[in-house]
Length: 248
View (cartoon, one colour):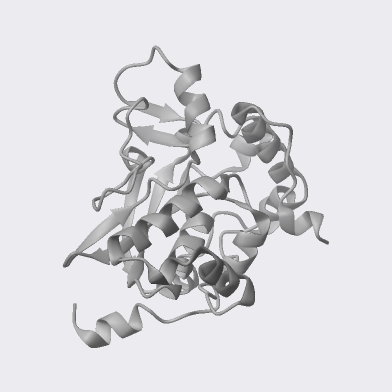
């Protein structure tokens, strides 16, 4: 990677607000900057995967500091937090945008929520520059507690699995752990490739988000709570309110 490209892919943005005090405090408290590069990526990745529960935020274009405050996220919002933290610890990364067929979400999303969702949902993963190449990171979307519940619920399933937020060749052994190579959990549901962008800001400016107008209002005011309650039931916990909303 050329130095100018690396510098550009380390910059903050309105969405990748890694200079926010909450993200800076997290980076310092965890000591991530002191780790070798491979371990640094892995520590940030595992934090976002497992300490930020799979769930649905109010909007795709929330800044990373809000995602951290919420304590929950889906592909786009957890990706935002991952990108911000990676750049905050000196790891160059970029945004890769897609759409996925909404059938991938069936089970995690039901009823009115499933009806509201567009047929093709805006999706993304994070590409990180490591060991002289771009590595795709998508396996952070489902936290281990949620994924473990799916694996137990569908213990007898063999072959490709699509639903409940997963689209993978093997639900029992998906490539979700950081080992220095690509990680995936929804890749098999991709229907369109928008290409790579320096920031999520640039992508959303060009392509927009999943919902607008009345559907967006219904999602934010009513449907999102149903969706998060359902995800928590699958996970085996009582319904959790996003931490940022508890603080309000």
